[in-house]
Image (cartoon, rainbow, N blue to C red; front, side, top):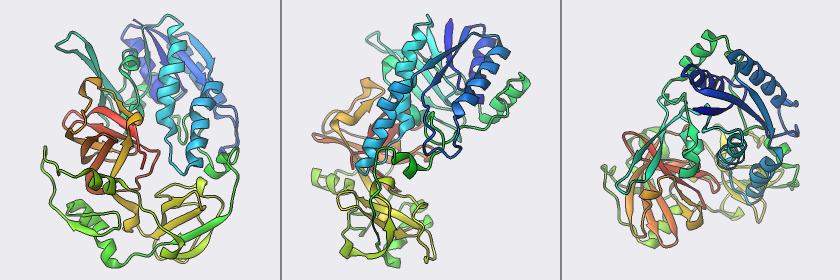
Amino acid sequence: MKIAVGLSGGVDSSVAALLLKNAGHDVVALFMQNWHDTTGTLHGDCEWEEDKFVAEMVAKKLGIPFHFVDLSGIYRQKVVDYMFSEYEKGRTPNPDVLCNREIKFDAFLKCALELGVDYVATGHYCKKDEFVNEKGEKIYRILAGDDKNKDQSYFLCQLSQEQLSKALFPIGDIDKPEVRRLAKEAGLPSAEKKDSQGICFVGKVDLPVFLQQKLKPKEGDVIEIFATEDERAPYTASALKAGECVADLQGNVVAHSNLLDGEYTDYTPDELALLAAPHTYTPADGKKIGKHTGAQFYTIGQRKGLNIGGHKESIFIISIDIENNNIYVGEGHSHPGLYRKGLKIENPEIHWIREDLQMEVGERRRYLVRIRYRQPLQQATLYREEDGLYIVFDKPQRGISAGQFAAWYTPGEEEMIGSGVISR
């Protein structure tokens, strides 16, 4: 087969190319440039130039053709402009998920197919397989990578069956140390290269500085919401581990037992809406303790960047009021304002990787769910209602924020079934 590898200059994609070449495939390397601007980047230089140089050296070492494509225009339009728009609304976007859906497995995929390849391979730590259903249709599946510490299936939670039909993930069944060993053994220039961090193809950034390219600073108040020890108790590490407490919208404690596999609670539509409602506050609910540079520059659960002292424990952002430009914070990891029981995904934002497993209105299902990369999978029940999809967790979840992606998996094999943008 002829396969294009998205060669980024990192060790993961390099070893993906190595494995495919060793397996006897006709492999070509394709490097994409997606970003020129260094505004807000912490390194202050064009990392893509170094990445391109390393990628070229890897391709030369492997003896495979090297191609370059500039997708910076569509990347700004589909990913970066989306980021600006979401932060302006007080939401927390995940640009890496959008990059995979709109760039790597769309614009980049189209460029690769023009080279006459059969598939596009990337260095993601996840697995893909396929089967033919009773109708004779080929169904593609995304499975968690064998290296649970590096599993990157979450970043692919918005891919479609059509995109998966052309995708390969060669390193999904090996772990990171083995990837490093293979690269070193083959003498690849990327063998010791550090993993990239920060925004996909942009790198690590000072987020407020980066966002100020389009969003103007505006001074506002930081207001602390205080919680009593009784209110904090259900959210301590021991209580969350036991899973014996949940909370309603106001943070009131409601005792319950853990659900068994396959069981769920029958909530009314009003109860689901209450469970999925975010915490909201007014200045009268707390005390003003400082100033910030613009509510749009911050996210729920954020700890750094406020520069406010005088607390025994760290303070965390628990609510953002974009309309009034106020930020609400709470002290400590166990502050009830950090935790929520449920979330909602609006109908247009529900995405099924397994289209054959779509839920019907009125249906309830048990799945494992995560709302951010590397978060351990959490037991939850999905409720399909007329106005959208509700996810109710067995245990309260920390830092649920609109704009994030929730992805759901089956137990056991940990197949990713679908995902959606959290609306609230």
